[in-house]
Image 1 (cartoon, rainbow, N blue to C red):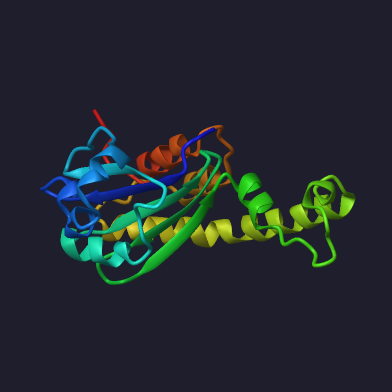
Image 2 (cartoon, one colour):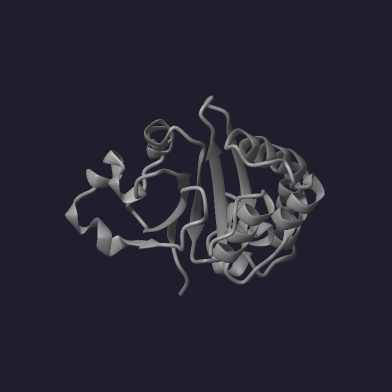
Length: 192
């Protein structure tokens, strides 16, 4: 079983665990958080267990840090929805591990009694193919949004959109590694 929870990436002179929204989560929070090695310039990544992060924390963390923030909502280390928000309120999103995201997002027909049987049918395969194509069609806009967000975060525009698109289409066993590679490719300084 892989990791399920959130990866929170932000820049701050102070530890992200001191953010009021995380402090208010309670004293047991430290047992639910793993800090990744920091990146130069105050960039930090927290790995929060499922149930610690709330969606409305994103704008609150942007306000507290005064910097762009992104969060990856990870499911079983196999798929993640990354959401970034900059200080001007611009938001972007992208799925990581598109094949797994497509399988997660395929809508099951109302007349299906047993999902375990449906996923073995040609109809499921076709629905999965269509959903994967939909997600793939969004990749260029998602990559552009990621680059705009990174630029707003103060990262020098060294990343190439084609490389970001390639990463958004990549498949990795552990989506956490794909998230880290995305941050690297966007031009954030690598962790020591």
